[in-house]
Length: 146
Image (cartoon, rainbow, N blue to C red; front, side):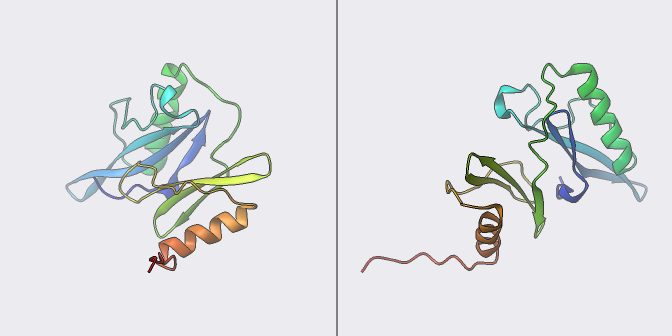
């Protein structure tokens, strides 16, 4: 599988639709998608790869296929957009969430939907994003006890 195209992801009814290039045929790209659910593993489609089993010829086509599959098959539908504060940095997906006055994040690398976020709380979205950027830039240095 190639890199997940987080920059083309679309939030839809409680899911984040994430396209990727599944393969090539005669120099034409074939697209597929993965889903993230804002309710996590309690959704039947969280981290699912192309549950519709249909592939597309471009990004907008595969997004439409995913939306139609969600409309017809999802038992869970959300009117909130828990994916609205999402950012792409160095091809990594960062989703910022807020509970009360605390912020935290989910961090997904370019090729996998495995959350590698550190269990850390922040006072602002900006502070959270700064921490993530520093980590991805290699600026967090662990200090050893002597």
